[in-house]
Length: 163
Image (cartoon, rainbow, N blue to C red; front, side, top):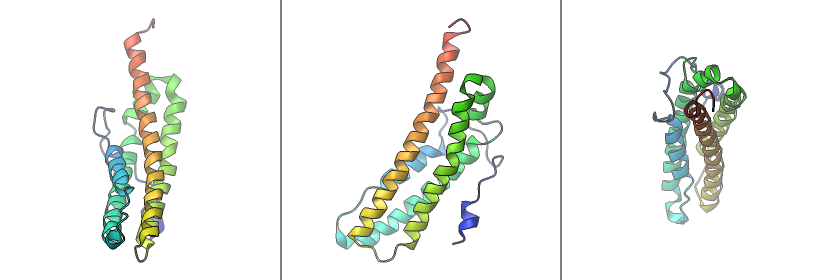
């Protein structure tokens, strides 16, 4: 697999913008795939089957992360609208968008490690599930901060100009 081709940054204009957290965001799917992948099977006889499922889940998670990045980095994305409409949140939006590089790197490294794994045994299962859990935690933090940005914007809008 050509690492440079698969790790290249997505083009931000390729997908429609998501209107906000009420809209289904692909990061929800990525989190689900990684949480499922992180569940180890301690049945040694099933390690090879577990590894096949793990690989499918982390590949699907990587695709979902790329879709999330494509949506979030569009010029007309919900995050960029917050940046324009709420100057006080510009720093937080910038950090959220900058987080994409690290998340993409982490999920790509997980896929590469899973694909390079040889014979599946209990130690392989434990190692890969721990790595998936680590990436899933990073996605959970990213999603929580994403929702907090919308919460901050909504609280400001509900409070009105004088609030």
